[in-house]
Image (cartoon, rainbow, N blue to C red; front, side, top):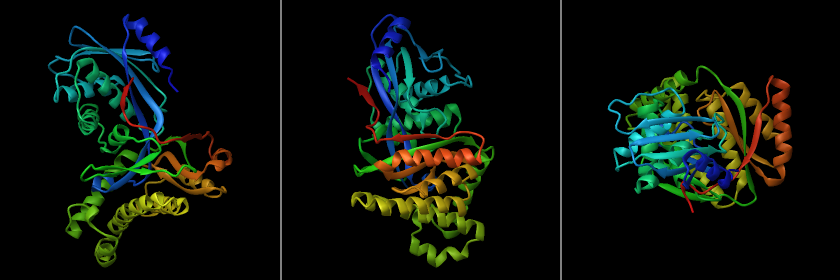
Length: 378
């Protein structure tokens, strides 16, 4: 974890003054994949891997930001008339500053950032960075906005300035995280409802470190296919199709679109059923829904990959594992596993063995815990 004293000393060495601190966690999605853009339901949790930003106000309109993890520094003028991307990590910070300045007056600031969220592991290091920097800039400027507005500003930075077409789930999860709880997010209303995670449950993430090239184009294809299926069924999005509706009308769709719609309709139902199971402490049922989610993503939505399937199959053989599924956009990335706490060590060994025997690389296995959301550090 991040030691604040080391970050404070590093900030003082760079800027000669004492900062205030702000934290924002990464996230993992327990279930609810490829349904956010159909205004469906998702069940992520903020995790105990965080980005911490230290900041202090400046007397001018310059934001100077340093990443201690990258050992790199950047600065930009808030009054620059035509801001352009640098193609670097600092674009996320500049995008957040631009998005916030459309909402409240933002002043110059010195900012230093450090993270314990693994970068590129599917744990939303970008959202953690955006929200931590956003809070740091707001704090230096003496401003406050709601958590929903902060999440939207972060998403706006990613979509509008950085140029990544992401949904709002990651930012909402980082903003609204509750310790020992998952978050049921309605992607239409953006209502966030904490759901307790039973204390005997462990959540493990295994990162393949792999991302296949077709992920970007295939993602856009899946979104278009979901939208076309909704149009043919005469609804706003597939969120508006129940299991019973699909049983009656799904056969009217072309085969490919029927498969895509079957996943989205089923996934929304699985998310809500998983919430019921977690509230009842029924980890076996919650895990069964996670297993069904992966099978649907693999067979109907076709966004899995051999690396993910090998890990999921290996996880399911371990005593004490309730369920395993790919998490994130797919075509590589990570899986998430729900297990008993005493199964974590044998699970890690099984995943490392299965992956190493099939692929010429190692898998990174990490247990994560549900964390509180983005906030100042007292």
